[in-house]
Length: 204
Image 1 (tube, one colour):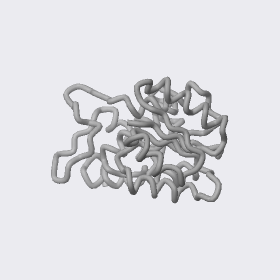
Image 2 (cartoon, one colour; image 1 turned 30 degrees about the horizontal axis):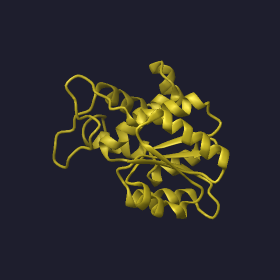
Image 3 (spheres, helix red, strand yellow; image 1 turned 90 degrees about the vertical axis):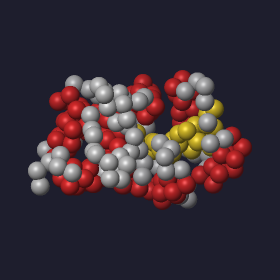
């Protein structure tokens, strides 16, 4: 299994590579300058375990690149890293299939923690399968934290607001939301709330 970093800036690419080697020392980290190099790199270096993608690669529209990669490797986490502030850009990336949006201005420790969270299985009580997608026709079981997040999303709270209420970092909130989205098979807050209302987690 390999971790793929795609960024046209050498220093950023190398720095991300170093972070990933600390997070997953047993995995191979492959650093690429161009998106067009990805398929050949996967053939050479093995199945992907993670993608870290620069949003503004030359000649590539970020959202399209996300959709293309996710179309081929839908179950592999994809992290977008960008110089653009989160907000509309983050929402666009998540809608396209990205699992996490990280600003390049973040501290290295915060970037490392956010990415590492994608590899940590969250286990709570008896709900050992809470990170797995819900099978069609099965009962919907969510952890207490996931139900809490749904209520907070319904209140219209931002990631920063949720972080303040739960006394956790904003980056940890993003990882919790990623798990929730993955669990429900959705890509956005709007889809999450629709799912929650349809399944009785919120009053219609």
